[in-house]
Length: 384
Image 1 (cartoon, one colour):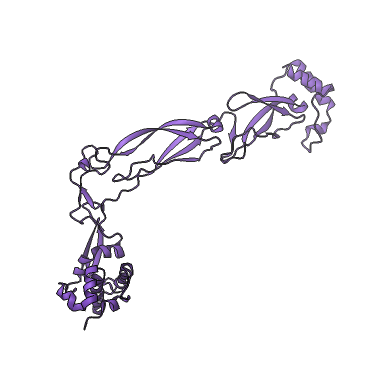
Image 2 (cartoon, rainbow, N blue to C red):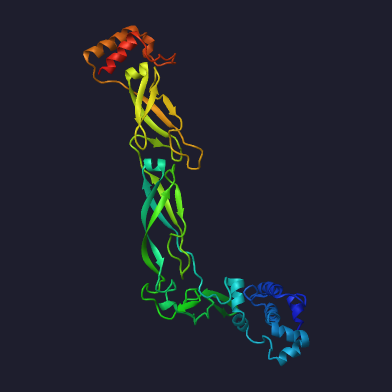
């Protein structure tokens, strides 16, 4: 390339441009004329060198002040002669910037603490506990930051700048015009190394631990609900903050009630006697948490009929009251009859119309306290 061009013209910026503008302009030129993108192009390589030289001057306050006052002669008087050698010199000089532009990360990094891993804990509770809510104590195995080295992995916390990467965490090298930025193997990208390994944690910065936690489980939870306990996960690297603990809940099966996966309604099956189904009456079902609930049975109740007990179900986890208990009726027919019961059933068979034994539309329900043959039938079954 011939006579040197004005550095501001090379960068395409005004003479009063700030450092951020100059850096952005250099990034654009470096991307455009980088040897990796222009293999074998001598003109692009010269432009690449020209931009690097201009940036070297304009990003340095002292050199820029000399250049603004006296031009190239002032710079030569100050000992700067530009980049006239191998292109690898540019990669060496601006390794941090090229790592930032083309490989991530630049400048001295130093140790960078990282957040610890999240943990999962599976916990099963009973339906009764889900109804009212409960506090459960759990023991969580995890890692904790080493107290001896404060999580650094170094004896007494003494760290040194990594000699391989000079604290950058990356090694930048140029090979045949190509720039390669790789994670430093000496410090694994941390930028610092231990002067001596911590004897307590073996240089890991963390130790095995188990912590007992009190977990508050709100009313109305269902299987699949996930509770987050902030800051109770594994310890972070290099003394970084711990992750979180996630408690996954399973509500165990109940001997009498069942519910939809995320529903607030409780379902149960209630078997009533043949006489009660015909004549009506009442029955008892267990109440979650203790006690019983009375259920009215209408006369003429059929298998599969339901009765809804409003507000007797599970609390809604997001508020809004409670669900219902849905009672599903079945009719229990006795498999053994004494003589009196048999005579009552035979009498019933003689007085009922034949179509009563055929499935069809329900014509109405008999009321509780019916007399005649229905009353005798009820009395006979109740005396069983």
